[in-house]
Length: 485
Image (cartoon, rainbow, N blue to C red):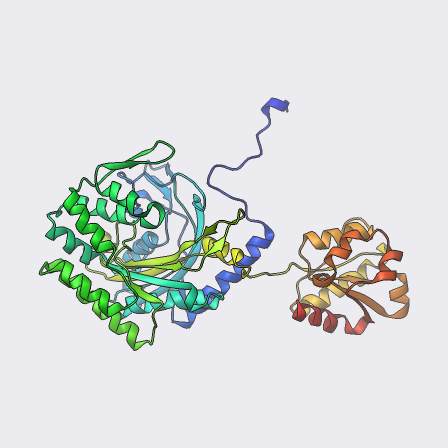
């Protein structure tokens, strides 16, 4: 092949490769979160990555056509397909298709990648993993209260203290009532306001104020049209956004004054009141707050919405303070399944953005660290049967292990184990076989020294974090090393 005909090794913008260490950490975090879901009675479901475009619907923020914001293609039957942009729209299709065979309410969780064809940026990827839970078929607002509590519980099981996060709750009906009192009654206009407020954490008050009016041009020169509100109308919206606080009862009272006698707004206040009562009944403390600035950008939400936000600051690589913001979110979407069935099917759910949450945990030095396999080094090619027997014994005890199958050079074998994030290596040559022993090196203690070793004599003279034990004690010794890692 000519050199200029070779493909370029590169990633599309907005996509990332996941290393072994990151994949292990992600899997460990998912295990913790899904165990929390299962403990609350949710069961697993898997739906395809591709759905019919019309089944997904036009619900993404900042898009005006169904094929905007998604990766779409035309199938052989001339129908449009698309990669799912979240796990909720496919759930609606699944329930509509199989509802007669499902328990009611139907409680499911699902983990998987989703794809969005949007402008990538720092922390914004076109493919990311979501970890969802949903309750379909219940209009009881205790479901919403449980969802808020469950998001907090999931964060805490990953090591985030209650003082380091907030679950912020609002109800879209309350904002609809406030807007109606201000003369903004058209659904499309109200949706434009919702989408403007949804950018509050990213653009700040001035940016949202611009989007409520004529519009805003960002640093790249891209222009976003505004909602077209008058200055007085924008003042009311900004007052609504700023009405949050740590005391749920006080926030409800403030929102009650803003809503007045608007019927839709009153229903929103009633829903938030029911959620507050549910949170009190579950003993949920001040980490769940009512915040009118939370509206969620997805168009299918119909009432209560919520976001879990990390509140503690960290420093970036240049020493500047930063916050990771929202790491989980959800809300009630009572009309999504109705699109398919024409019947009222209430639903509510939440989603943990596992990749963003892992990035925040790494920033705090609290991300799950899952070691690679124990490496059984191969010092003598005539003893390969013995090496494979050692690895088999470790695996039988539930310890991931592999036999090194490259060069016999010890330095290269140790570097291999280091790159594999191995917690320990097993070493046995002629002397060890003659004595009926093995050497077990704890790489958590000796990684730096292992990088410098040049030959076996030097290794045996220094022996950092290394034990020589009877061959029969191999598994027990390795288990002790892993327990201390």
